View 1 (spheres, one colour):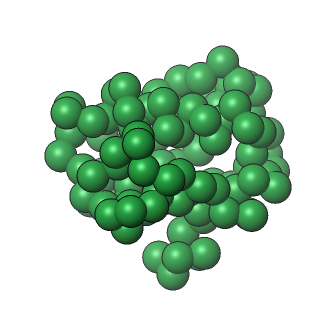
View 2: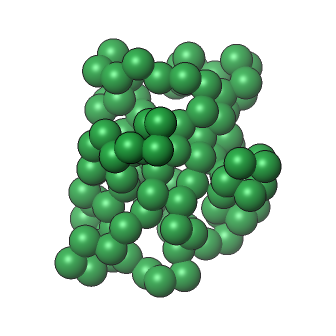
Length: 102
């Protein structure tokens, strides 16, 4: 699950609202902070939050906050409030919850 060697994408909605570095940071968090630390299903949810003007990612499992990951990137109110990362087994995509009917 979430093998970094599989194809990875971001939806148009994500690409058009988040900077490339913020998108890349999602993959970094999955590969370096979540894998082998938390049990992961094929669907991961993050809330994007304003932490003193910087973007933070709240990792949510079962509707509960599990961990927060700070970033050096500025927060912008135009960012989506949450995003999901789905692994189909062959491909992985970052999207908004509404794009994959969640």
